[in-house]
Image 1: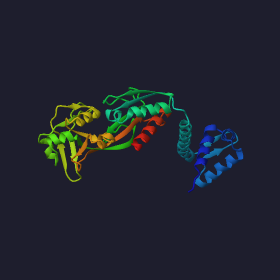
Image 2: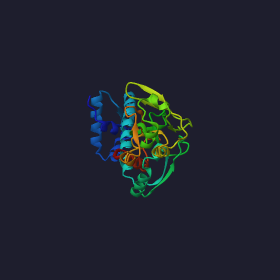
Image 3: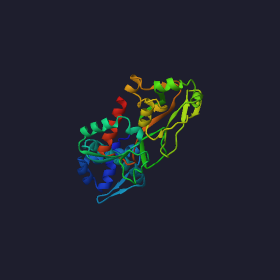
Image 4: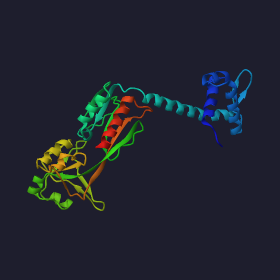
Length: 301
């Protein structure tokens, strides 16, 4: 059965208007055209949708059931039109964003300057703490998270921005002093670990894998922090081995030999960068602009 969705939408319009005349006027169609299309729709469906008299229209039982589907189509059409109109709106207003340190350290200052230049009517309010804010209760527009996976939450919508591949790094000076580990077990033999503190305040172990084997542990060390940028700087000064993403060591960190890969066949878990927004149908133009521009920046990086 080949149904025209527009005919179903016109059927809903006739019911809502209460007459063919009013529905035809609202739809910008001749009354005769509207009546003919409804008659053709009934013929395709094989049953009457409306009982028509000179004074009123009455839904049949079958018509009531079809009306539910017709109204869903109308809602989706309205949503599509609203989205198209919404996308044309100029981003403006206050945008409240929660950033975890993994985002705050990925050239975010340069990105924010570019965003402010492109969208001067948007005012940014940023929270850079590692805590997980309650987007709805604290009225945040957007949270940017780094995690292998996010907990299920029907009130939120999470979209993947990019993935970060992680490994162990140390400075040449450190490796000259302590030696180069050849296997994960060597890390516990006199090496120093620069340890990352997680969002709950715990020190995160290194979970290494080479595709066939897995190893979990971390050397002892004098430094632990919730900032990868700080731990990276400490590692560059020869104080220990650190787990970092490929994005944290791009550029001069590798090209100038400040850091080099340790145990290159072994990898830490890949971390996904996510944008998380309240689960409403349409995002404000300012939120959409921020997420789109960030996705572009991460793809270029």
